[in-house]
Image 1 (cartoon, rainbow, N blue to C red):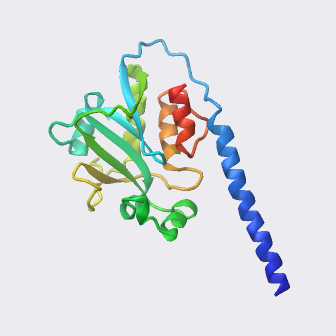
Image 2 (image 1 turned 45 degrees about the vertical axis):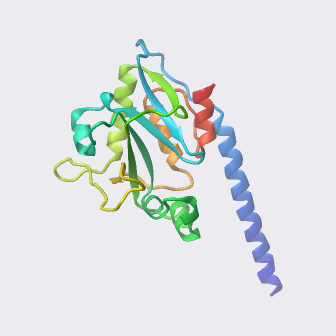
Image 3 (image 1 turned 90 degrees about the vertical axis):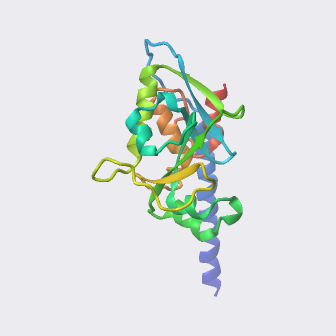
Length: 217
């Protein structure tokens, strides 16, 4: 019994050290900026970042999306903006609110290889809470290419829509590439998208604060 408690104590300390180290490294790397290339272009376009305090989405005006991309998303009439989010498929579908979160869902998402999904939301108007990012045409093209490449496609090159209801009548889920983990979170996906677009952001930021810090500074 004594040996059991010794092992238990060691396990608790290892777990505590892992969690503390994770948050410490995240805090450091979140505030270190990426190095961007100097582009000879005029930043005349804008995208947005939306946040619920824990999760970030990329919001793109529909006028910046290719027709083939729009057709794949089955965009509704009157929609002016589309938000894109990436994350664990089971988490997305089974956790419409934080009150629905279970230990099993969280553990699987963070530590086990799992399927992922793209979550898109249609908006007819913008919101003042969104954070604006100015960018030029080549940056926008790279961003859109990154977003589109995250969607899984069938043999006909169509996005694979997941047959479940969204949180509202204006949002949908699609099959996505990649696997969610404590290292690659939904916010890391947003951070990678900004890197692809040559937008200054965090080296690595699993939480919202690092990305928002670079947008707002």
